[in-house]
Length: 204
Ligand code: GLN
Image (cartoon, rainbow, N blue to C red; front, side, top):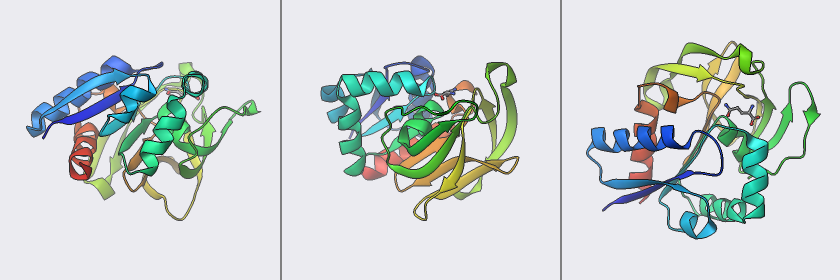
């Protein structure tokens, strides 16, 4: 059995996620391929998808226009595991407002019943790294890289909180879908990518 993992390659941290996922597969001894995907056809064949960090308004608009947004939604509803990182977590949310400019009406997948505050920790110049933990998924220590990061300000009853930093929710999970405010592909620790790959294997 070989896993087909895709990284949504419309905009953002695509190569970094390809590398981290390949490393995770290798360290786990799991067979699989990892490719950037953009079209509904490519997405329909996936066992798991990572929506990378980048700019959620761009990822949303372009995926709406080429119909991949609709295909991703369909696949998630059919159980495909998804890891949404930063802009990717914003894409998974029901509501996202910017800390400074408020409502933007950007296209979203609206799968996770969460409310997002975009750029919750400030702008690019306020980027930082911090030790965080995700005990619920057995990752007690992780280097969180925060770049124009969102936070989760409200969660529905079906959403588990995986991590908080300075009282703000920075990682969530609902079934096979995980969202993080921080960028796991920008550290050498691939434990979150490993957790995700294992999830993809279990579902397949
Ligand atoms: N602030 C960006 C957005 O709103 C997300 C930043 C990131 O993915 N690093 O889309």
